[in-house]
Length: 105
Image (cartoon, rainbow, N blue to C red; front, side, top):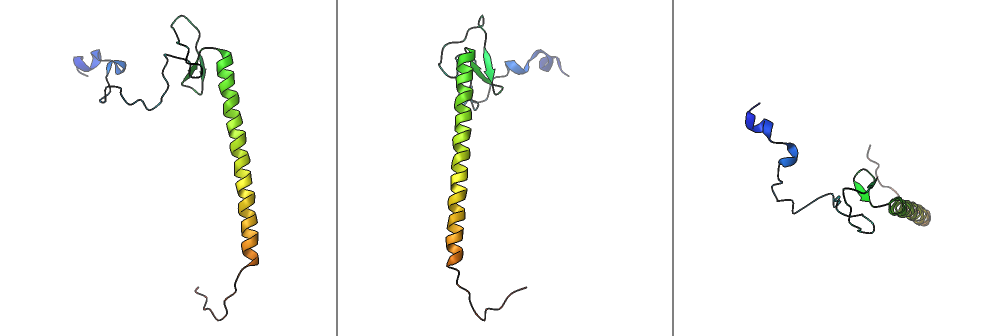
């Protein structure tokens, strides 16, 4: 290992794009829900590994919203499945049987 590489930390490396495009969208500067600024001398409440919140209340509120979204999504999936099943049953009643069609095996 060279001396130049040993003196450079991973965190000292600047992104090629200058940090303009952040994929995660989360920073430790503000609460992800209420946008209250976060400081080094206050507690930070984390959710899903990298999402910071200023208080337990903000974090709990986000968790409740996520759970509601999952429930709504599950309901929508069940409704779509029921509609598709109904469509399949209706289509099955309109099946046209072709006579004298060779079967490929």
